[in-house]
Image (cartoon, rainbow, N blue to C red; front, side, top):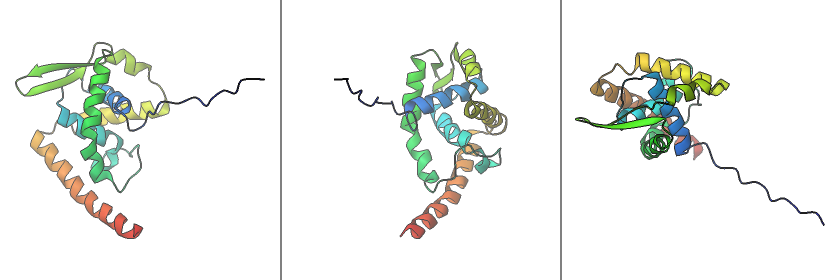
Amino acid sequence: MGQIDAPRHRPRIFNTPFETGLRSVVILTACYPDMLGLNRLVVFDHLVVHTEDVGGPSSMHPKDRSRAAEILVRRRLVDVGLGLMQTRGLVARAMTPAGFRYKAGDDAGSFVDMLSSEYMSALKDRAEWLIENVHPMSEDELSRLVQSRMDEWEPEFQTGQAQAQ
């Protein structure tokens, strides 16, 4: 009798620290040699796939009623993703007077250059746009931008909930 192969378990990729860590590497490579704090990386992780929401190129991910909540749950994923990428030399962490900051690791540029899928090319383009247009904002300006977007997303979320009921 022949052996029946069990279905292969495929590791989950989407909505994981691996996915957010990969986006962080792309973002940090785009802004190299600048270093970013965790809060800014969390916001950038959200905005890099929703650039249209802040006047940028078309968004890579679809509009979703849960965008207001989405940015709030990213912090842990981004934090763990940065740690994962740090173990591979793609992210470096440094202690500064302002707290921990992250920058692209020694191998990040070469690694990102090898990523050539259509999705990764679009991600790199949007990361460049984000660094040129949003990165220069002060922490206060960035906080106001995020708050204004969340204020706009909240009614969309509530409208979506009302329609679902």
